[in-house]
Image 1: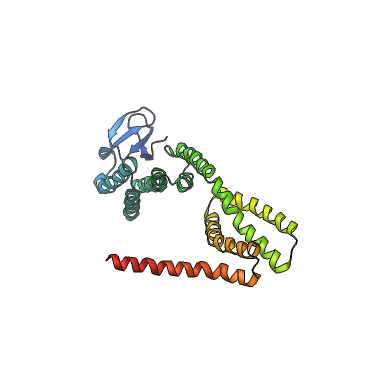
Image 2 (image 1 turned 60 degrees about the vertical axis):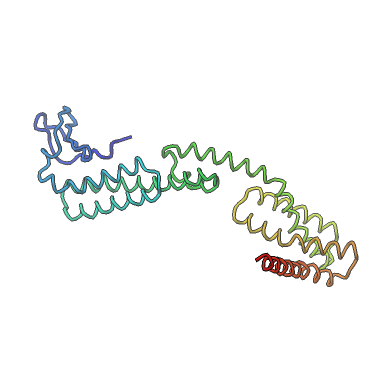
Length: 271
């Protein structure tokens, strides 16, 4: 990895005439040709006016290399941006070199912030979020290794969810099939085919996970009780369709309200 702190400007070695490379953060100048080294303060005129800027850059680099907090990454970004603003006021060759170092530092600080955010998700075992964040910085530190572990854990979780995916995948297609049967008189064969196709599709969606999967699971959960009640009333007890629908929808709501009031009364008595 190249040393981002070592930057050439138009200075020549007094010994061999080779280009001098300035390591601003290391405080040294080295001839790229003969290897002679000097203290940077002895080579660059008025070096003291850059010392505060260089100190801030060094501090930002130290934060990126050592700390493990997103807030620290933001602090490093602020130090780099502040240094760029101060260098812009000087408008000379050295400040131009320092701005290049700062721009490189800002890019590294951004990667660092993404990495730390992803690592926090990783440590909390939020595998999907961790894989998404760490995948944005391929090759950075151990991001690639953690992404592979996240993928393995995500696959394990998906396999554990297969039974629930099967259960949830039956509800919405069953409700849709019954609706077609009762509202339009569709043949049972058509309803069953649509039910099987819908269940297969939803099963795959639930297996893959994601926001859509969560929304559909909530809908399935809410539809499950009315669907069971309707099926019992309409096909077991042979009640009229309209009556079965009303009871299936209103019944759970009434039971929920009564349960809530009962719970509230018990809570008041315990107080």
